[in-house]
Picture 1 (cartoon, rainbow, N blue to C red):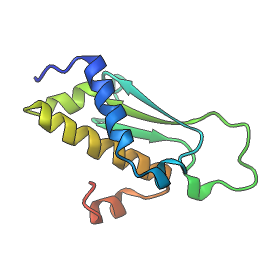
Picture 2 (cartoon, rainbow, N blue to C red; picture 1 turned 180 degrees about the vertical axis):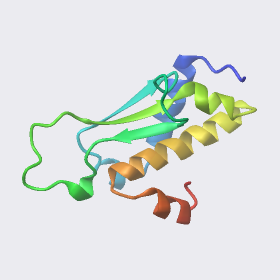
Picture 3 (cartoon, rainbow, N blue to C red; picture 1 turned 90 degrees about the horizontal axis):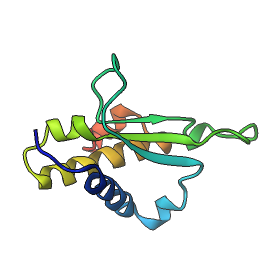
Picture 4 (spheres, rainbow, N blue to C red; picture 1 turned 135 degrees about the vertical axis):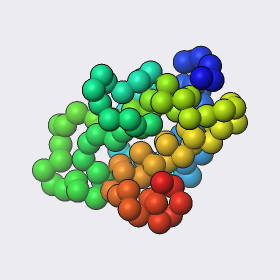
Length: 116
């Protein structure tokens, strides 16, 4: 398995977030992005996970809630990549995919758009 240290991987996630157009990035609300080494034991194989209430489902009742969470899983991404360039690309795709869920875009639509 390719070895990308955690600090370098976190930097790649930050760079991927910087790739989100400013007009969209400004709309991200009450959301934290985390890096974890692996999915919890017994969890399904994932590269990333969005947990929260998408922007499209928030209305007048939405107040005082914990932030949404986007978790990017380092080891599963490293397991499917052969080079650091592959890691950079996969991190970008995974970050965009999970941020899209924050905006209310489902997996089916993401696949249609080529961000599967």
